[in-house]
Image (cartoon, rainbow, N blue to C red; front, side):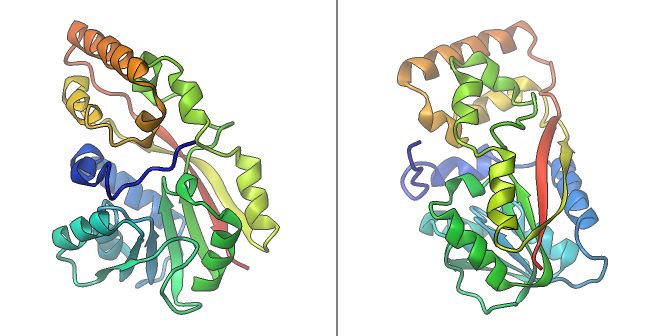
Length: 253
């Protein structure tokens, strides 16, 4: 699959196109908190932090957070938007993080695992930066565990096929970590609340900030958005469905 260059293709619209409602953000922070130790503060890493969708909320909920982001322009936007004193952003990637060994209690990777080029190296690097019993919150889709909630994909030719091809099967991801000494702490779904009426979601989808769009042909994009627009016009007030999102929690031994 084609590698996405966020510095040239998506950085301008990403924050708007992928913004979370307050209800969605609260649901995710509650889900993360349920999978982390009760003590506070916790030192966290937001790996692949992008424009900082989660980083300030993580700091408010759990303690100081370092966002690790390789895309210069995404990182610049995150830095400009964040006013929380417990947040900082550094250039880096999951394979190479400029933080001391054993300095974090947890790391979050939210829909960034499929972008990692050297996953074996990333597994080792994540183990290096986390303390013993540190946890990795890995929010990802998996090719064999994709919940039927990506409602807009059904309107695009090969929509679900293209989306699934971006991700590894669950057992493959688990094996990459357990073979390096990690253990699975939990696996399940988190219900992300509706983002609102579909008519309000369509302009955000047209920004094409979901990386899936980069793998459609121009004809598929035209066909899909045409079908989607007609479906929404038939019932403009219909809410976008809630999303049952998969979350894998791994623990460093």
